[in-house]
Structure formats: C-alpha cells, structure tokens
Length: 115
Length: 113
Image 1 (cartoon, rainbow over the protein chains, first blue to last red):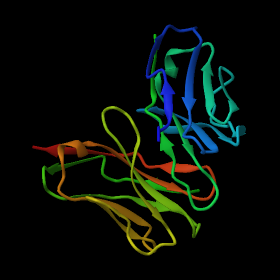
Image 2: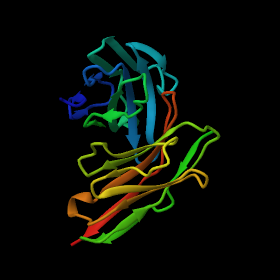
Image 3: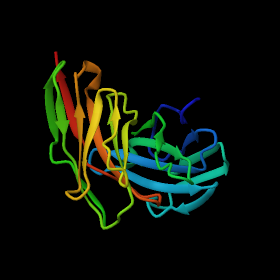
C-alpha cells in the first residue's frame, strides 16, 4: 500500500506568491491532518478533517492560510500571500477512525522556503 | 491539559549497544495511546512503536521495545543493537480518542561507529 503522498517535496518561492501544497491520504483513512514543523515551535496542528469536513482549523495561523478536502483522496493547503515566516516543513498525516486505530501515518513532508 | 516531556535533548550510543530514551507525560485520562516516532534527516516521520494504555504488556517491534509505567506516567523507548540507521530525532507522542496528538520536543540520537 502506498503511504501518504505529498507534493511538492520542496518549494522555494518569493514573498507574496501563492503556494499550494497537496496531499493524498492513505486509501480508506477518513481523517486527515495538516501540521507545520519549525525549530522554534516544533510540530503544530494546523487543521483537522474528518470525513472531508474541517473539524478544527484553530491552528491555522491567519487568513492567508486555507485548506480544502474536496474528496476522500485529496487535500490542499494554500498560503496566499506567502511570507518568509511561513518557511517550514509541512506534513500531512492520515488515520482511520473507529475501533482502536489511533495511529497517524505521516507523509514525507513539503519543505517550504519563502524568500 | 496533557503534556509530554522528553528531558534528554540529545543522546549518543555506540553502534551495537543499547540505549534508552526517556519520556514522561501528564494526563487525567485513563484510556489513551502512546507512540514513538522517528524523524531521520530526510524529515519523514516514521512510526516506531505504539502502546495502548489499557494493555499492561509492553510493546515490542524487533529491536525496539518500550517500558510503559502507567502509574508513573512514564514511556521509555529502548533500542537494542543500535545501528547507524537509527540516528534520528525521536518524538514521544500522546493521543486519546480525539484528534489531538501531543508531541514531545524530541530527543536527537547519535549513533557512533
């Protein structure tokens, strides 16, 4: 089985540009998470989807960030306009719910550098 | 609020030796899960081992095992026969039946040849 797939793996952009990060969760998983990892703040939960519905977006830094999950196999995280302080590694993770399956599986991450 | 504490920012181990990474947590819940994730230089977060709080038996995965002390709220990871590929950042993680996962600050493990 393929794991969580993220694209692009690396992104370098200039301040003010729009950035779109993509995620394909593991087939059959109905929960999806977007995290941001920085040296200063560690891993932060940005948004959580369950059955394609955003349940908690309180971690989204500001209105420049938006996330969508149009179907069970695809999600995007968009930053518009991007700023240098958005530079970080962005992870997507998925899991199944129900029963006692609480394990999150992470994608390889997208390393974003905003100049 | 739940917290996870990893008091060792960095550890070193000689190749083929055994090392133990410490983790303590604080929670008032009785049913929860604990995980160790490994993050090598590639930055991929890889699940190492998982423990369910209601199970008294310590989880093991090949060279990796945990010492789960529920009363003491302690969850240490033991790596036996350490290999160069074990060098990574290790994150202790707590989760309950919700979507909130609490990550520790990580322990960087160096493996010396």
